[in-house]
Amino acid sequence: MSVEIYEQQLELGKLIEHYSERDGVHPTAIPSLFLIRESIITEPIARVNETSFCIIVQGEKEVWLADERFRYGPTHYIVASADLPVTGQVIKASLDSPYLALKLEFTPKQILEVLSDSEIRVGQKKNAKRAMFVSKAAPALLDAVIRLARLLENPQHIPVLAPLFTKEILYWILQGPHGESLEQMAIQGSNGDRIRGVIELIIKNYDRSFKIEELADIANMSVASLHRHFKEVTAMSPIQFQKQLRLQEARLMLLADSTEIADVAFRVGYESQSQFSREYSRMFGCPPREDLNRMREKTII
Image (cartoon, rainbow, N blue to C red):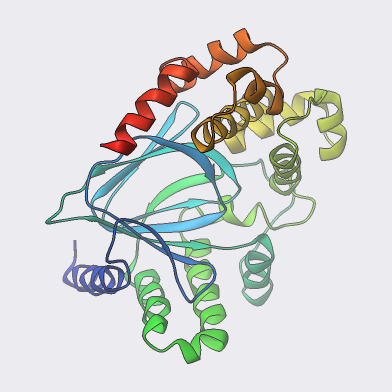
């Protein structure tokens, strides 16, 4: 690590600690910016990861997308260029040296604005790429992130400067080695853009049954092309993608109230409770009731 990057990480870490005195995810005065602090190694958490950029300045984290593992720590950042069901776990953290990270959410429209204002050459016919990647943070990117975080000290400047600094952050990501993975989701008519449309539909209607032909029509692709591009973007087939969404939502429902397992299975789209329990066990390591009791015990402790 260069001296410059070390000093930038140190400054960013101090800003994150100042505005996140407790463990957890902390919204900020900048609507798309979140600060994260964890002083212990966490349980694996399954959720939908929004389209976002996240950079770690202390500690380490592991994210699983289907069977693909992304591990990253200081000097690295992770980008999700589409909403994806993932499992994440902080794997390095302590009271003396807590996990510290900054997360910035963004939209395809913001990416398109950067592409329109720059000389980055784009193409519609490129093959779709994985919608998640880890990369090393360059000093120019860190500098833009720090300036964005510093706005929390002078919130009167946020309305004008936050959009500009966000745009600069996206620009440096697009200039990086994985820029195509980001641009593909913003170029109207590209394979990535069409898959993103299918992803959004499934997320909004995760409890509904889809025919693969219906999804292919929405993407304006053949069934074979839809399968190939969808798996390239998400590391899953459309059916596997929907299954993860259903099981994640079911777990949240079970933790939120005392709803019967059969009712939850039906609400998330399953017709068979036994199938629901089998697939739940495969994803979370134990049947719904056992998992629920284990999670509640940890919450009490």
